Image 1 (tube, helix red, strand yellow):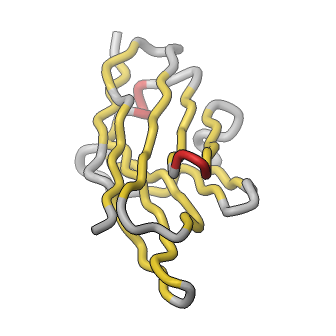
Image 2: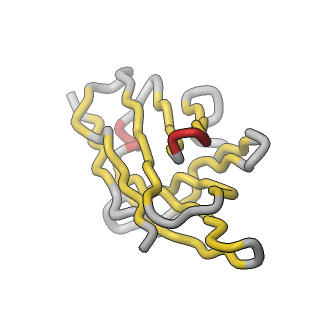
Length: 120
């Protein structure tokens, strides 16, 4: 059984920083693409950032220059460093990972989410 567990959310003031972590556990051959998503109240879930196996990353325009996605393959962990946080970044943040389970099969998993609240 594979699980993704996010952590690192919390309440911070505007302009502050947070670092989210996403740890994958279970019978994993390797983690392929990882994405961070977020969902604010009353809004659809949106893609924030992705990172591929080689470390190539993409970002939503709204977070470019403020957020950095990274990964540590030795720890089956992905991170989202969030700087210069704004009130509009308030949301539940979810980790999504495409995980290779066998030599020929992979599956996408979601974490349970971690709340990020930006408020003074």
